[in-house]
Image (tube, rainbow, N blue to C red):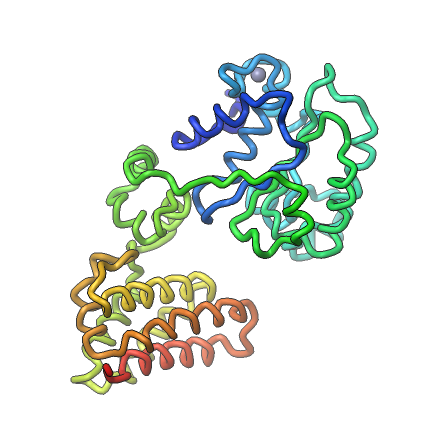
Length: 351
Ligand SMILES: [Zn+2]
């Protein structure tokens, strides 16, 4: 059976319907932005299918016409996906046209050649005079050279062409790119929509996974499929150690956590640790934890012995560590120093 065209996620139907029915007044470039893990890529791909469909129902792709069949088969002549090779590889769709590129690590940037290759596409007529749609995701993967090449295109947009850019970090884009796009912010879906959807995907305890993912359902699904618990076991252990630190002296316990952390990708464990410190800063001012509510007993004990300012500083400090985490000189040393920094922050006396 054919997979069909990309579909909007349930919480996107009403915003998509309203937006697509603007018809011929449609802008030539849109910046679709919002929190990571809410389905911006799904939205952009479904929007592309809907724009290309020859007989859309209420603005949405029919999934039956010739154009929809081409989109589903990945060979509509008026449709281009522009994303880094690393993303294409994750999607199982890397074009291995020659051996030398196949052996290299796929690029994490959108390459300038990918934008330059569009010029011949712009020169050909569209199928039955319809739209031509390019989806660019994530837009912050364009380096400055690539972004400038796209900017030239957006300054003199080809006729009947729509660019859909998605990003969770608009501040990383060139301001000149942003000023050429109309913005379409996608909200974080309502809790009931997200939990219903996660349940349909077979996730037990959708509320806990959703909280751990900050309300982003696709991120929650990914974490539920790959993680051990909404609050990862190593982090539960570390929080337990921190809670017990005052009585036990602590440092040998931190080394236990660091062994478990070594097997995890740095950006993932740093992200979880940062969320735990957001929760600690909240609990320190008597607010409810946002990400790991089931760890409340540990969070309360840790926060009771620490200054709120020191916990908040640690959230910022961890964000800085995430920026350098891609290439630590010694992963073991890096983990150890981060965990020790966090332990010290929790040991700072309340003022
Ligand atoms: Zn159709």
